[in-house]
Length: 602
Image 1 (cartoon, rainbow, N blue to C red):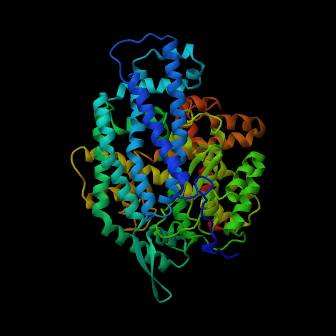
Image 2 (image 1 turned 90 degrees about the vertical axis):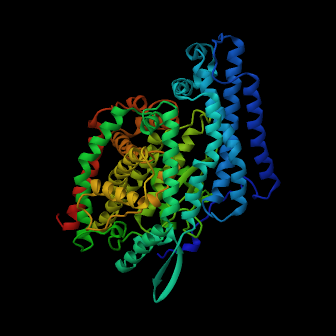
Image 3 (image 1 turned 180 degrees about the vertical axis):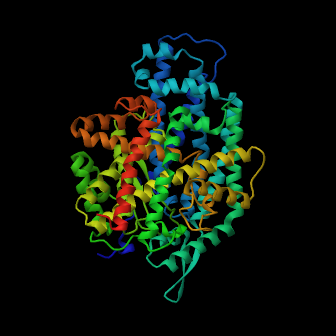
């Protein structure tokens, strides 16, 4: 079955507002601004900030706390809808001047909302939170949020400094990120195909890595490198500025390092990270085995960078988009009717934008919109990897569905736990496809499983090492384009070893990976999510029915506890390498199976 790109769906936001010029959007936009302003007034009138003197925990204080919690939850619900709506335009058409302007207009108000969080945190640090928990059912429902804020209050600057930092971020970090996002989404490259020169977006050229013609893949890869090299100076300025700002802020707030801050934000501790990273480093040779076997499957002595995604031949299974959607719905139904209904809604109600096109950002993501609704962006390519990505992002939507019973403050899930449902749903689809597959299709499917795993074990580990070393060097000075490229090669080599041909590393990976620009250490949580999800999936297979009830509850509570405590509900100790090694053993078995299929061993 052929794939017609123009028939791939675009998401539908008209159910939220009729358009950017509509009265409904204007009313929603103004409602958010007014709600934030009213809450600033509430905070000012009640001196919600760090207090120098103790405040008695009486009925008046309890009422004030509950009013603030209700108000923040309501604001965040309104903001989420408005931001998702604008983001729907910004990520699919970076040239949309109206959306860019309205988003820019919103940013100062979002800065005020962020400052409300800071003031609320500082205020809680001055109160007897434990006594408040005893006196208020609303506080008890938000216990984890309040206790975490109490701890975070120890890492706040003075109110005046926090206010200044929030204001400067608008022309600092936020602006640098928008430069990166807008600039890279508009980069184009020239590709010669069938005797004609075709100009295409950078993301479309990167997707040529799926093409069977190796010369075309190589041409596209080098064209992308050339485009990134030409764009590297402003991108290096963006990256240096973002990391410099992060270092300054974390130092001022009394964190030992940006990593210490990120571990706190991700609800894990250093022993957990060290246990996981030790296990993943032990698994590097196994993923290098996979890459070498993939080279044999393609008849190559070694893989080049642009050989890692090309499909391994043609299987009997068809993965056009319509086939993919039907398959995902069917397999989600084997887990539960609830999960299938979620997929049906996503496909029938315009939740998904799947077509790669000019001005659209690369990659894939899912964002919650309102209630049980999400929106998913992907750049669908025919092949099982496209199906896996679709299932992965729908897993995020299922997580959002489970979170819908919680308040916005309770829903704030750390990245480490945000990948749990996506990995789980991906595994459901992968295992189902393997059951009925002939050997050639098994090879293709397992290749897709291992390609993703290699990205979040080898790739994310390399990204983590890159960012860790970048921060160390950035403490002293800015890094040049050449130094960033050298550091990228060095950290890629540390995880890939000799699995790729000499000279085949990607020196400009730092220039197009959005995770470096939008957040700090937005890498190891993917490794955590994959391995944690694999461990949970193994428990599901061992005892399905009891698992299901506890699993949905776990997903609903990912913003209400740290990772170790939530894992303990399933009898998992994530602070020792054993759990992580067991999850990696599942992937090692896949590598063994892959090698046998490639080498024709029965």
